[in-house]
Image 1 (cartoon, rainbow, N blue to C red):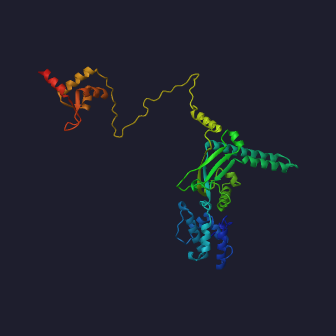
Image 2 (cartoon, rainbow, N blue to C red):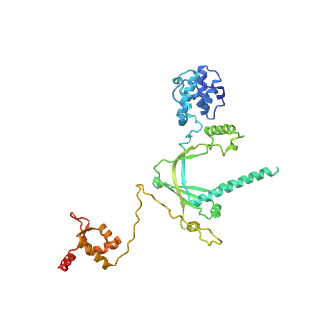
Length: 415
């Protein structure tokens, strides 16, 4: 074959058993050489598939290989074209069993959706319960490490099996975090027929001083929620990803993938299932003494001061702040006009000055009065309101004019 090299032939990837069976039957019907099967299955490795797509001897023009668009549909299309080119046949001659098996094959790096229809519960627990469970898990992990170390150092004896059984039994008891109970009322409405309860073990509740009885209240969620995991267990993609990490580790000079965990990327995400029920876990009784203690500790932690002022002893270096801090420049290039504070005049003196201004001119804007009197705006408005009125209509809208009583008084004095 022109698009298959000898270096590309390798062991079939994990999860290709169904495709291998269908492709083997097709090759038997075409009376193809027996070595073709492993060569075609080796193209399920994206590295080999890319090499074949970019080879100069490759005849097919579409689809074109693009490193930034390596999706499962693109990989399947390239695999079909390279298989047909190797077998000198048309794509329409591939049997339905081969194309259907190809669709079920999970390419390395693709999202595993085989568990997408599994149902899962999303349970929101209080923070103090999460801390207790996390502390228990860490303690169990440390205990397992210590037990394994003791087994490696201890000599073999007659009581070894009994000790192991006893440890296993104790470990199973310690791993129990609590119980979930479902109560069914057949006479209640469908939405209230089931009630869920959570009960922690007495030992765990006493150890962390938290309540041991909780209600699991159902919450409605219209939007679909799915659960993802970054650990692939018992899947074909897990075996393919593990094999890829082993090859990458050896190429990087490591003995195995375990020695290169800090260099190689972790597994891709896997779709674990769809959330069918959503619960909020709350204490069964707010008057429970343990819950009161938890609330008290939570309030003390929230009110605890994080910053403390203390006396500084010994010589200290004091650095003054720069004078031009937070300097802001205008985009139009103009300098900021500094506002000067005006000193407040006595009321009698300000009234005399305003009367003089209105003798000069009958109409004034408030801005003109501020510029003429050099007085604070609030104080000026308080005084001018007693002497003048603001025109709110007509051609002189927004201008102040002297009240009629002061105009008449001024006219009588002038006579």
